[in-house]
Length: 487
Image (cartoon, rainbow, N blue to C red):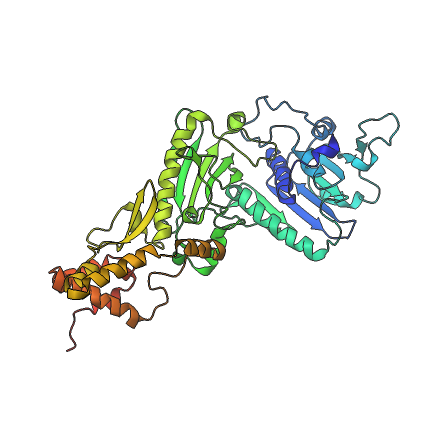
């Protein structure tokens, strides 16, 4: 059974996060994780300054399933199944040693060693006292604190495999740092955080999935209370388009899994992140939403109490959740609205005012999207100011121009654009991005003339309308020069 439990599916990062949960439940203020490279003798150690355990509590903690998951727990407890310490540890190592001390109490230490099961006479479940010979020095930190716990992993057969070297250990440490920064970001952020996390002597900095307070965000909703349940709250966010972020902000906002993988719901229990991204099986028309580029800016914070674990079907790994049926319609509505805003921001390259509808007084969009039972098509608006002006002056060329527009509409390389976007993880360049001013001015001048001579606007009105129209609203200095004669 123990060998089978090793295959539950933990990664090193998620296994360590489970142990940090135990430290938090023990009222720790600081948790230090250390990965030591020593070839086949490499080890991992977690030290916390929590309440610690006496002999009876430690023995219970080392037993499998020592707690009934249905039992009532403290509201701050992050566990449920009584398996995390053992299953997380065995998923990475064959030897687990735990030493602990309560304030004013003696140091107690117990050890599991999967290689010794069945070898000790008269003991089918051999839990040994004390550290393994030669490992005593690993528990020196307990001599420096009044109370706390040390967890030591040795025989790292799932980590140190054939070909694994010191460079691999460094890369693993980077992934662990990113995972802990994401999972516990709400506990380690701020000037006076609830928790300090240390990895190999360096403090873990929180990763904020929502860019809270960023001036270019399209949506940062109030916190909503979900009806027909207790203690479940939701906050919806739409991040800025990448064009609205600095290069350092872009990389940070993408998150450990990248933009697309990080979109969707973020489910928390007691501010601890359980699920990062995904749409919880919600969708429209009987089809669940999938993660895609168009909605990658949508992130929704969802908080549940630990009394709701069973309702939400939280698994042992704390990696899956499923909302109760009675809440799905509310969550779907909020998610649908957030996705719509995210899609518009993505499509318009971050022009935030687009999310609340068309811009008042702006030039109409030249592309029209038509949806029908036979699919979606994209058409050039014949009543667009510049198009209508050209057609009005076209004379004998009008039929040819209409044919050209139709050809363009029917040959838009939608699949190529979509593939390039998915492969490059970036929107194809549009909106005169990187174009010199004289190129932008050519189009601006033609549109300005159409507004003045064809639509009958005076120059000031035409300039004002263009100033409200993407992408020209990013070139207000050029617009100001339109229709102004040199003196």
